[in-house]
Length: 210
Image (cartoon, rainbow, N blue to C red; front, top):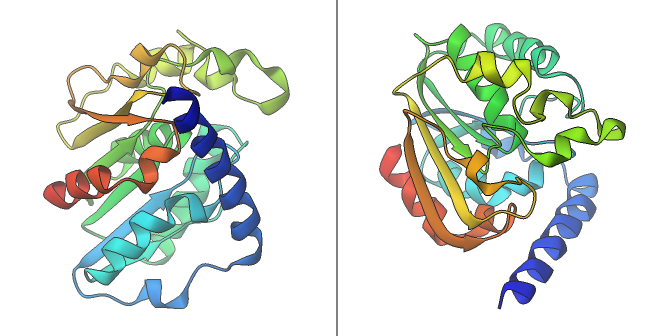
């Protein structure tokens, strides 16, 4: 069963890459009366990885935002890009849904925009790092276990963060890094760093939060 789940996992990654390069972000995401949700993708991610979530909540009446940035840039550089997006649109009282490295980005944004952010929902985030942070070629130094960035980041606490993760994550190793101390942690009975994004269980949990 684990092998089948992992095959599905890597198929989804491939599918999002192919579809995302040819499919623009829908204009109708800008329409909604319930409020604003900022979506933040992870390293080497593409917007379609969060499409299932975006579609679901846009249909419920939320305006969906996908700020553009280079996912391999340093986290503080990405925070600058997203901050420009937030400020230029004068966004207030918004939520953030983020995946993987995006969860670390969202936590820096929460420090900066605490009064404007309703809540932050992190999915499959390497809060204490991952061994993949040692791969120099893909610029992940910031998520090396016990990096100075993570030590500083984990000293900041907030009750606005809800942290959701799968029972087994193939990209956040060790899996113990998925848990965030002093936050609301929700572990779902799902295998896969990306498969969790397509699950009804995840949508149900986010629905309860929003």
